[in-house]
Image 1 (cartoon, rainbow, N blue to C red):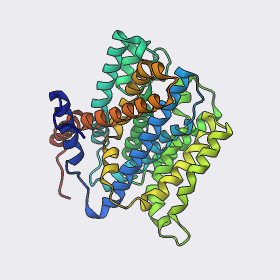
Image 2: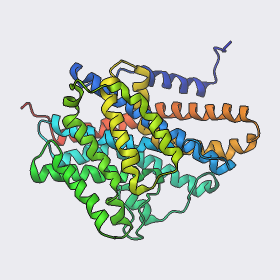
Image 3: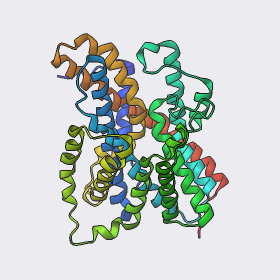
Image 4: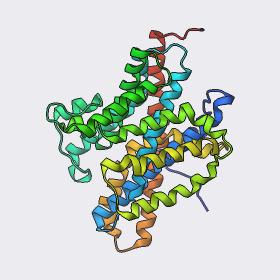
Length: 373
């Protein structure tokens, strides 16, 4: 039987978690609710695939096991496809598109939490370097990281918070979107897709430095796939031959690819990017049911993505090593670590991420007031 008495701090955390889980969600409109919810479900799935991948990889590194869930890294590819879809949606549905406003709103959405987690990481590197991986830092690397750029001084592409490499790609994509609309006025983002395809082609034809190679990796084509799904997915969904249930077989394909050992960054787009796009294409109409708990995990997915490495490293280096010979205790402590990730993600989203974004968006609203036509 669960005791009704909780320590004061635990009670406050529990109450905040309940408020975060029960707070009303904003849906764009009834007509868009299905799409918005399915995207949130996909975000949750992608984030937790990455969580389980890093948990498996960390245990493998610390305890000498085989990495049993390497395929979880495909969550990043799903995120990139989703991002292409969402940016195409925003471009199509924004009545008066300002490239500068678009970039600032993207910054308002991502930067506050990312900057906070970056500074926390730096603090951990200074105080407890043994708890984190790759504690080496430099001021130039930190400065460029805060602006989602590679370190042009030292020629390195990984940011201070290493998991932020995906956000460097995201902001590159946002810049391409803003530039393409500013130059061409194209709201379908097909011009942006063409620019990304050109970058990938240049990367295949020209040998450049690390930074050039970073921005011309085929992985950027996953944004293109998301753009195409937004533009043509609805018509595909109406075809008689289209059966979204086939996506249930895709995990078997993913597993076969992972077990085959065939993988490199050069072919990641084909092995993981294309299946991810097919998964998203099928999931959007299929995931039309209302699943508030999964939508919540989608709301918290960005917090989960940035936070989980901290918790996993603490779990593996401090707890897992002590119970490596007891699989029962190890599984129990892993469940606690996953629960902590979920709880802190909810609190972080409710108490910092969402309020910070709302404040910045209200300020941006004073600079770009909404027009009625």
